[in-house]
Image (cartoon, rainbow, N blue to C red; front, side, top):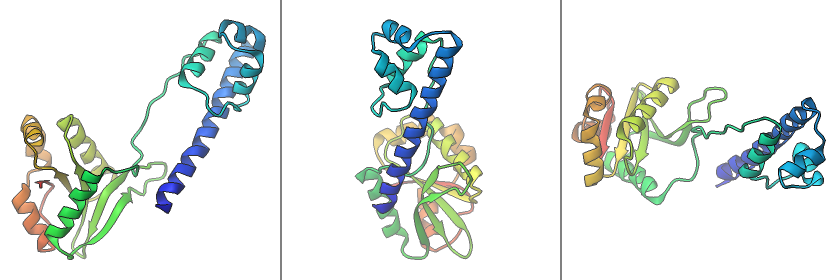
Length: 217
C-alpha cells in the first residue's frame, strides 16, 4: 500500500506542474495576441479572476473542457494522451492469476511484483518478474484480451525494452480469450511459440522454457 500511496503523491505533483505549465502557455498566447484577461473571459463565458487563476495554475479542479475552451480563445489546441506507466490498481482476477501461477510452479523462483523496467523516464513495469540462477522471466497477467494482437505486441515491446530473455503471458482460460488468441495466430507463431503445458512444466522444474510462452489457466 505505501508504494501505491507514493505513486498517487507523485501523480498529484505532476498534475500541479502540468496546471502551472498550461497556465503559462495560455498567458503567453494571450499576451502575444494583445488580449486582456477580461477579453478572454468574455468570449470563454468566464470571469477575469478565473482566467487569472487559470494562468497562474491555481485552479486545482481545472476541467479539460475549461482548458480547451480557454485555449481556443487564444488560438491554442489542447492535445492530451495517456501512456502506460506500470503499476496502477490491479483487479482481483489479475491478482488471482498470479497467485494461481505461483501455486502451480512452486517455490523454485524468486518473485518480484510490479517490477519496473529500470529505464530512466520509463514508468512501465512487468506484473511479475521471476528470477533464478539460470534465467529471468517476465510475467504479464491479462484477464481479458480485447485486442489480442495489440496487447501481445505491447507486451513484447516491454520485454525488448526491459531486456528480459523470456516473457510469459498469463490468461484466464475463457472461451473469449481462446477465440481472441486464435485470431492472433500469426503473432503467436513467431512471438509466443510455447504453449501452456510446456511452459508450466518448465517453470515448475525451475527451468528456462526455451522461448516465450502463453499460459491459459
